[in-house]
Length: 428
Image 1 (cartoon, one colour):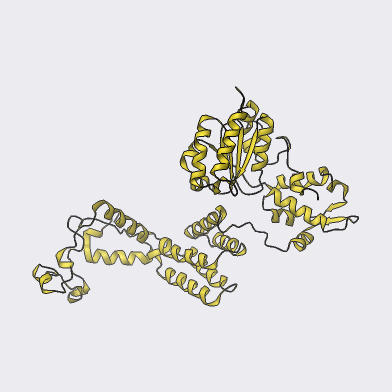
Image 2 (image 1 turned 60 degrees about the horizontal axis):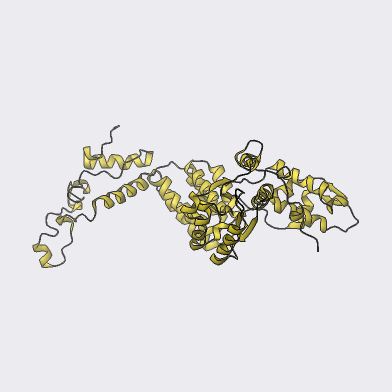
């Protein structure tokens, strides 16, 4: 059985390496180190299929140094120590340190990562880690501080086209086939910037045709052969958090078109609709807030509707809530207020409740002054009377500051009528 096309097309030199010009192009930082023959430990962070493993192999070959590979999925602390011991014996005086390449380093446990520290610190090995997850979340700080971090990007359209034509022209098997490349839109879209995926799709389409017939590649044929969701969306990975972040920020930024787009990305990628609904409820309270209190009601109603009617119709109330939130006036005064209140509590501790605000269910409590002097607001004109509600020593604290949207302005004016100067803002 022949090797997969992606393996057959794996570059062996930097000249054949496609993409990541910001790292390995002429004059780029990593290219300079490689050309100088010395590299320091580093971590490659990027999506699948952008050349992390290939780059590590090219570097090892270029530096003519021993190259060891471990997979975080199948290796333990014992395996790490064994490789480090081999590497220490394989190093010659004044030569480059052996390279230890760890794929999916984000899957290494803390103890496994700890076992690398000494060897990296002493230069016994040069560590090259590869990860699809944010290293700041998944790699321990001591190891991260000993490594440079290089971010790899999804391959651009021109990179993918170059790879596609190179495979058709240079691969020993494909070059013998009659291939007519009519359209590239679908194959590029399905690959999603992933070189490995592009080559796998190309191989699938070619192998689906009889050996002696012409292979036609166009959008319809690619879509027919694959018949799967073309969108890259890992519900547990980095893109999950990037897209929900873009969604919420689009709502906060009052851009309903962008908000709908990012929601569609989540829907098409198979996101849990309850997750989207929960985020809408949070956004309604945090970002729209008192500027339009109805936003929270609508977001909560959309959540209930999704639970009742299910999918795919549930996308409609979610879209309604998304547009309503994005087009609503914004205020985060309640969000800032509770944040300020929590900070005040952390700074001042458990300040005693004033006696007149305490409940007095027993005679002893009443004798101690609990509830004594409390004024029942409804017994006074306008259902308000001035009295102390904050603990002693904190009566001057201001936590909620109105932001004067049309709806919130009414609340602010009510506070001015009640409390006067206490609630007067500096600009008023």
